[in-house]
Length: 361
Image (cartoon, rainbow, N blue to C red; front, top):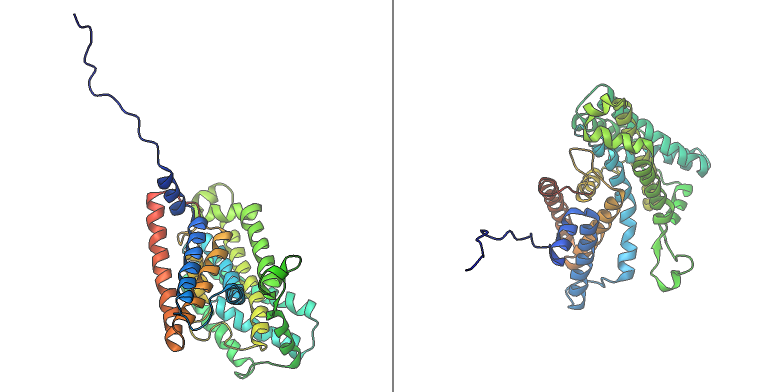
């Protein structure tokens, strides 16, 4: 007689995720990985177009290294936006470009006309930017103005002052023109003979800013408070964190970075220009685009320094490829179209991944 019994449908263990699904999840949830993949994809596409003879010039390592000069101010301002967006409450700073213009004019007066030594003029520019950013911080953190309105108002104010302070004229004295040396490309030490020449501004300005912001955001007690108020400022208040003060210093820090960018632009233009940060579409839109593309959540509390740097490189090398593929005015217009599409797609992607996964910035 059979002794077997019916035990119903067998319970099967869930299938282990495949290597490809794990890789896809990593790309979707780790923004730094996704940005690295996109950078490689952009380089591959435009290199293929170059080999096919579809570009007006070579898209090669020398060209890519030279285009990094554009990464310096945009990545630095992207880090400035990182600070204010992470702080929450709709944090954003539309005035960064206007601060670059105004502080640049002040730097031109101090260094170019009044003969201040460089070791004093540069810190004065950073301090001046911090003061301008502190005005934004006062309006947003203590007077509780919406960040969009407050920084739009200061954008107009700072832009106007920059224009009238020297009767709409740039400052291009010989001392200021000599600063163009900071925008030249140099050979890297030790291994430079095997690599293309790199812009000096990457070493002088960008790398120190990246290291400092990384330390402040990721390693300092202030960084932990910043992420806390960006995630939930009510809970941060109950935890004894000074929400207003923490948010205030985020805007002041963004201003200080903008002040240093002013020095960068004076060197790149060999002139202190009253429209350096506001001409055309200004510097604020690219900086905000880079921050959002880097995975900085517009709701606050999420963002990584490495993501901002990679996003800036992606935008710079994409723009460089567009200019070679579409020379002339059409390339410039397509750059703006690509920038706008990146901003929209990055915002949509941020929202989708935040809903579907627990995203690491």
